[in-house]
Image (cartoon, rainbow, N blue to C red; front, top):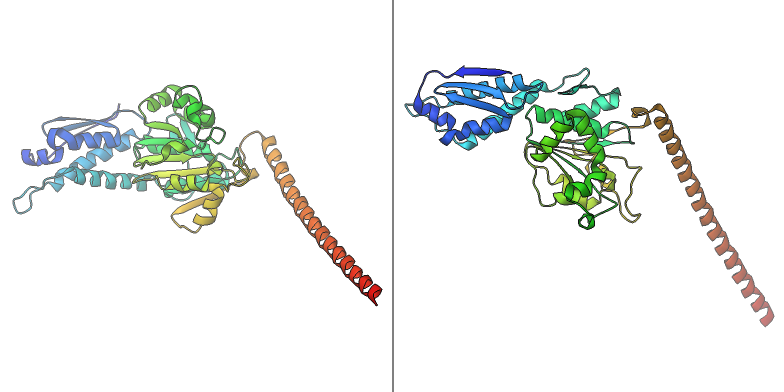
Length: 367
């Protein structure tokens, strides 16, 4: 097990009290923020990971530097020792996280995600750009057909952020179009009611974390899975939030989701604008968001096509065939609309000519 032992110098009990806080509450906050166990004996600190993963050693070293930095900040100025409060500790933790993120931030070349279950490498230029944008933007959209890895890569990025302790929880959500707001009428508890709609998200979690680990995290609410309707009124801080199947959100639901995002949070919205299941009179919240938000620089929009599909090769051909049919069908419908318009014009023209002819005949009879 990785561990780090540090000793603080010079030894000063008043400075030590300022560093640790009342009942060691400052140390407890550092422990919780980075998922660590910090044992203190006098001026000696032993730092261990509460849950070993690929990033444990980095987090332990980072926490050691943070403790030393905070102790240095208590150094007396003009004979007066600085009293640290929880706000100082929160700020120092945020700065420490930003430093870690800058060290882990990809810089050109290929990008990969490392989890306990192995290394996940995006395939192709579009997936590479998508993952890079997820890591560098607070809000990212992944738009394209099924099988292009939109949801899988988003979940992988969320799991990596959790293991790095950049965030404290993962929230996965999806609109339950078939049930709408009537989930309460379905049998079972909330999890059983919404499980069929969220199964793809469960599958991705189990693949990356393993069944037992994912279940434990869900029991502790570190990973939360809920229908979109249950997010109203919440503000989500220190979280990685994924909205899947967003083409089935209404405009109001999409706006509600985007305004739930709090401090130190990241959101990924995935969807396929060709697979909208909403009633015909309702516009997709995803389509509307693309129109309204595409010029906002802080957001990233990432588009996939049939060439990016990573399922069975025949799936790409199926999608291409449907795309061609839909394009041709749109042309056929446009042609029918034109023909109907011409028929109406011709009919009105004939009616006008007949009316004019009738008038002429009536005038001739009256002469």
